[in-house]
Image (cartoon, rainbow, N blue to C red; front, side, top):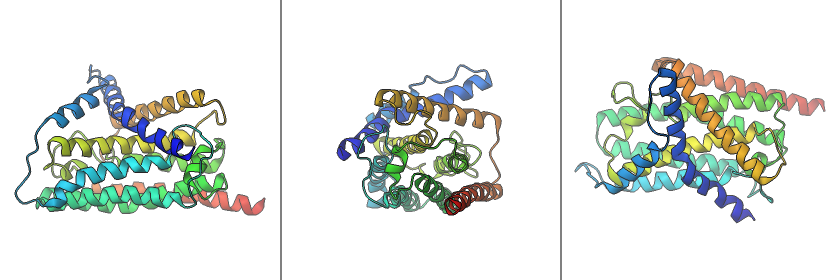
Length: 305
């Protein structure tokens, strides 16, 4: 049963993750009064990139060529630790949250390493910003997941997210908001970064993949879509309003909640501007304070009980 529970989530991520970008772009187009791209544009773009050839700079080494498959594999493997539907037994092992974060960190490490391997000043600038922001976002993510694990009294993040969640718990609500902020930061969305810009002085994620092309670029973009799906799935599992219901009902509600997260991201990107780089640490610090407040409430509540 654990094998089934681990395989459902990656399959769902592979099938549905490119749809999230389509939903976000369609929402932004509606808010702006435009027709916008088709919902399936992400699938079209990936198919087009996989059919293209690869142009590699002479300054790159085997690191640059190896990075896209590693980034894609590590990101996809991280989805195994976030259940798509509730299946028992859910727990893999205690402390699996560390493996989840290390897989995401491994993908980021190779993304930064491939950017530095190109020898481009713009790619190095984007890599530097990526590492700086991730150093602020990762502790917030870990603290939010730790809060969820404490609420359910387990040391396994997969078991915590698969178990019935106390959606009315103040700790859960104080974890959902920082998680959404981290989602925007980790996935290079506004107000942290603009995924549609190609202005080298302001972009972060796009600066690191300027030298990628063809199937390599497709794997990197696919991994980015899966990462957005992963964070949206975590939020959906936390806010699931019908825990313990039939798997079919859970499946429909989880998919609907993930779509709602994508809609909210589109609305946020439509009504907000990109923050100056010096303001980004302040927003991530505020997210950390909110998550830490939820942790203290959880701990003090347990001691009082």
